[in-house]
Length: 197
Image 1: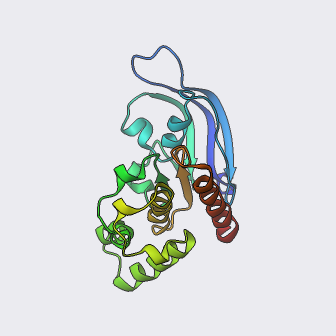
Image 2: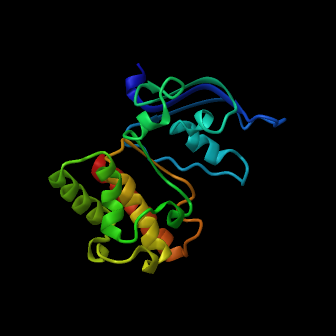
């Protein structure tokens, strides 16, 4: 049953409008709950498209012709609007600074939950948990612009975590970071997989 896998691709092919080459061709892929998967390949090989297929942005927002079937937590991405997958799939982009909407660490963590009218007590608890998970508790009152690249990336991860997603997607989370900051991010991800599964 599809319940055994958190993410399942069955014979998935993707081609963008006006493109002569397929981005993905007859891809079969299963990812179990609690699994940490690294997708590697050269620029333009379809890594970002793969991630956006999982959160439904492709093809709902980008267009393109999609064949095959993708399910996330048992739901077909074809039949589910991206907004409905938002509670299941958390995504962290390459440039976190572009995605932040507030100025202060703590406000940023509250933002998504406030939009969904979470109770105050729930928000407090989840903010505390997320700050601890990414080791940013001492910086909760800091202005986001004053954070280092690695700290901003950790905040972006925390912003995804407060929504309690079942799947966390990271698009080149260490590409802009120095080796030490990259190691920290990878250590946090390993710990999350270990603690949450």
